[in-house]
Length: 419
Image 1 (cartoon, helix red, strand yellow):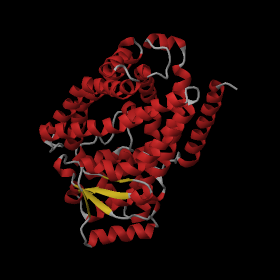
Image 2 (spheres, rainbow, N blue to C red; image 1 turned 180 degrees about the vertical axis):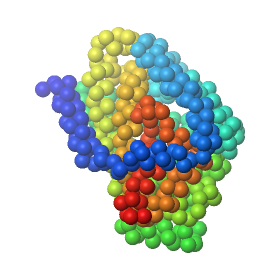
Image 3 (cartoon, rainbow, N blue to C red; image 1 turned 90 degrees about the vertical axis):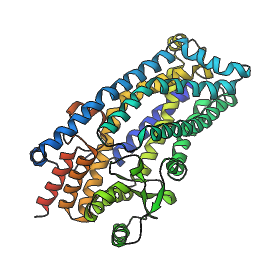
Image 4 (cartoon, one colour; image 1 turned 30 degrees about the horizontal axis):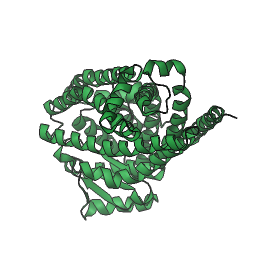
């Protein structure tokens, strides 16, 4: 069988594995959150708060969707015309057109062009966040964070690009197989190293100070059977007023992180509800499951790019002879961008189901639906979240259940518990 035939078999196998993993590991059945309870919860929220949140989201929306549209147009312009391949050639020219220079410098140049073109929309977002009082970072701090982000992306991107095109040169007929394995391995590696190497670049993390709250949180984690090394506090207040918490890492790098803004704004019972939600992610191994599905998806993407990218009409549009040459990297970026936009609603749906399960876990673990509901109200108020966003936007991009859905879930739990 030819390498292309084996690639088709591999893609079918990876797609099947991804479907099976999603079917078995993703919680497709969501906890009850009756629409009647959602509407009642919406009516209980202060009208001026709802109006301000919707005004804020409306101010963000044009820049956000314009950034997506412009990013897509730039990716298509660079990938489906000879412009991208010429940019890669230009980046490698000072080094004699060596393949390493084209692969690394050319690849980073393509990404940088796309970032620079959409930079005004990032500035638009920062201006809106500042105007509505969510950002405490200032323009100097925003610029520093932006440069840090570029630097981190450049380091990771350079390593990935060099490894990818080195594999192509070492195994020109079977690079897609080694590349798929490498992409999957990179996803797993980043799940381990990002929490300990990259997150500290943007925030300072300190253990939560000793006291009744920390004791309660650690005791709750032990009661829940979740091995958590520590509960850390991130100095988020230096850039935002938003409140949040999250769990990241796998195994020895797993930690629960709480924003210092959350500790400042919420009473202990509400902080406990938030951490209980994060413990739900850890207990159900959501980071591990996300890493597994991400690794399978990355491997499948490499094989699919090999198959689709060898289609002659696409190569002619891009002005290249083979998808395996560094000059074809803009074509790969264009294909990935299109697939990412198309797959966004599915990714959002999966994320909402996972978050809803963590909400149900928090309610069962704390048995305090009142604190859970008041926390959701506080999150929406401080973070200026639209409590009941437009349906089209919710279906396309919402990574969490809406505020009214989460409040309705708490009310449904309270009824079932006889509260």
